[in-house]
Image (cartoon, rainbow, N blue to C red; front, side):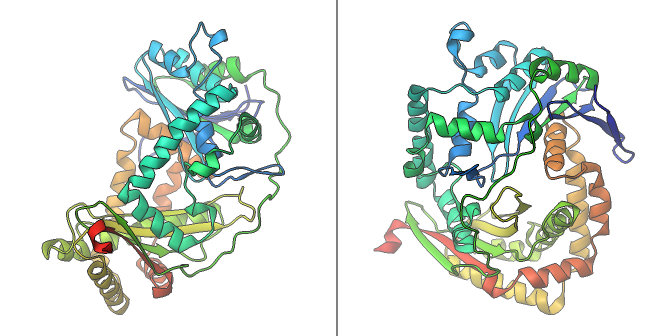
Length: 443
């Protein structure tokens, strides 16, 4: 076995071990005395990864491949054409999801963990596709795309991303379009698989009543025969993305069959740090800033809700990240505030007035400290379940970080740093309003 590294956290009274197989697979194991097990494989391949060697991949290839990875050759498995059958047989619940920069496959179970883990590792180690199965999956994904197209909330959010980022891959549809998925063939899926589904581009995280030795033995039985591959050089196959600090459009309007208008206020975060702990610090600072300003406990939401300007359920989100596999490594970030209202322009006016008030008066220290406590508590709560632990560790390690460094990073954020970030992010040229209005408003 390769060298095992141990990491501990006194505050959580938790710890995990880490090693790497000769084939390149990175493994993290967090022993936890619970009645369930959770394991996840994170693959460094997401919707923004649109190039493989000299080929530009169609939009939606990574998502298409995520669907196909569950398929297997029925001739080799007694007529079973899906790994779902194997997970079900051992009582495991499995699924997968994809984001802009990664794909994650996972399962949870209470028994027969070794069989479920073998199934997971086998699934990501091989690809079985035929013309017939690709055609069948294309129809399924096409229906998913149509559903997303008809979803007014998806259109409102997508409108904000497009207005903020223009032609950047971040604003592209993760599922692709009906036109782009028609160009996806078995050969393209094979090339994407060979490029990205490499053990050295994967991270296995496991949490439950299991040891590193047990996990390594299972992983070695499945992947031990895979030879290490030379480092992959991701050659740019598309033009450099034009980067602008300003939003590309200040306003986007769509019309859908909704009873009340929807709004999404997008704010572009300029000049994010490129990678590592600096980018993480930026991420956490944005998190604290958003919780300070827009949580349901704050003045902004309370005022709008009590006046009837917005409906219950207004939410905010943010994304700060970087993909070294883009043609030009570049960090991106944005914040959005979305909900249902009577008049999106009234909400936008209230947002602008609130931002200007904060610019004059500064961030309320009490709200800032409360925000840090909320984020601290949310992070600690994530260590209650095996699923959250495995997911959290995998996410941080994928970003080149140790999750336990969270505490020092959060505590290091000062009010003056948050205010400085506020001044850089909340500028009129970096705003956009995306709205979805009832069909009758277009008449």
